[in-house]
Image 1 (cartoon, rainbow, N blue to C red):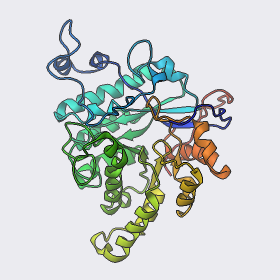
Image 2 (image 1 turned 30 degrees about the horizontal axis):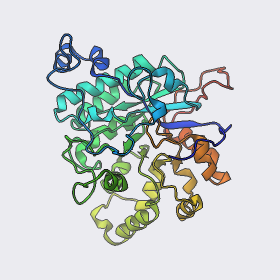
Image 3 (image 1 turned 135 degrees about the horizontal axis):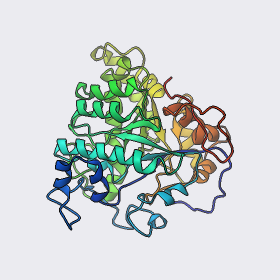
Image 4 (image 1 turned 60 degrees about the vertical axis):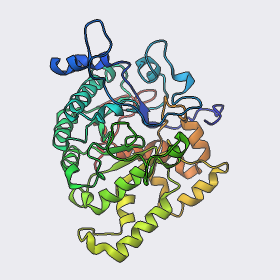
Length: 384
């Protein structure tokens, strides 16, 4: 993790990736039907026959996955509302890290109940605590029709600004027609999608966390963990998802971006030579990517000379429009906005820290006569 001595930035900031978590199984059971709650609780006991979620395949063996400063007096990092409310930013998008595990439960019906409880808990427990808090609709992709119903159920809440796809429940690239009901629902409500590194790295997953086979070590996984997201992006483009839903947008969280130039060139090479396989595509594959995809600063590959990354990204047209600031707090590798801003060209900072997120998410309509200055900055409806 980088030096924390950087002075805070005075610019407006939207944090597109801060993680909130439930501290125990018992946190979500009040939001479940009794039959499901009985599966995970027993009287006088923290756990029942089933536990709420699965496990990561890989964990950092050196210092753990969470920042030492993020541990509350009670609970786990990300579970304390007051601590999260101390995070800087005009608006905070509450995603999931450990919570993604619930969406990957191998028993699909229970995964459906778990994500539904998580969404109700977010609305009930978090939104009223700080007006800057906004959420993502967590879905279980193993049952796409049910996931679409969940989006329609809670996605109308004005503080829900996107959809967290969670685990790859069917072991198929996300462009596969099986998943299309999810995109129809998200498109109807102008909610962008969030695909997160790690959502393919659970012990119960039927999809591999990287291409070619299981890595032996955490270090190998950390170096290659963005590969599934690259696969999902190609699949979404070539399977015609954006031709069916031209207002749909996707945020890739934690993937890094140094791989983008060669990746986009290779996709365009395919489109020029073999595009008869996807006759619905109306433009080069890279144009779809630049129009519909965004990438978080959380997970960026910062070399010792940050200009080297910027030079690589500048081979992409309007690269400054691609990046959204996300801190990744409370993870051990989180970064403050000032740290990221210090590495960016002057002309990129306002876009990366605020403007790109302003245009990407489906924000609540501005309140008439709302005050500025120290208060949450009202946004615009996100669909273009």
